[in-house]
Image (cartoon, rainbow, N blue to C red; front, side, top):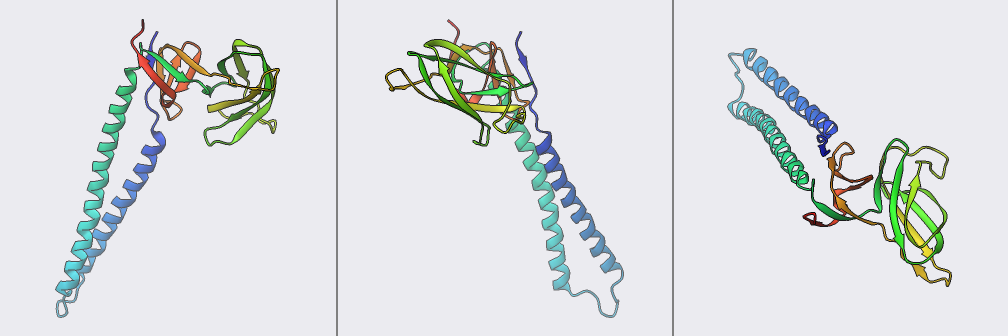
Length: 219
């Protein structure tokens, strides 16, 4: 069953709404001060025309800033919608992607891998900021396999849900470097934006759309 999760943009909308409210508050305060100043000016010594014109210009600038902010909101919403619809086109198509990045969700994450020779070495798991959260030594057998991670970190804490990337530094029995391939191919079942980035699901694997290296119609 194919599913599409809606884009999560609450934080960006919240920040924009705060900025908009600030502009409107400044606009209303400026209008109130200008109106009060005109109502209470001395008839024998009225407000200087040049100063009054300058204040009107400021009044106009605030008004334009509010309108520009509203227009930008509409443009951003339109672009986000168009981009989201573009990602939907992945559903039902076969993709090949660099699967070194996957999603940790509910204390579960896994990476499919393959290598030609038995190898030993080290692995590192990094968060979306590039910081190492978990590492260690490992032995891998030749062929295909799956690396499972429960979300534990080197400091003994539980990592938060999100995107994590694994890397390997391995050598075979003759101390020659051995490449661990983490690419994955398959038909996309769904697209999820709940993490803030479009994530494709292929079978039991999840990876960001930015890791896709090729797309083709299923054979």
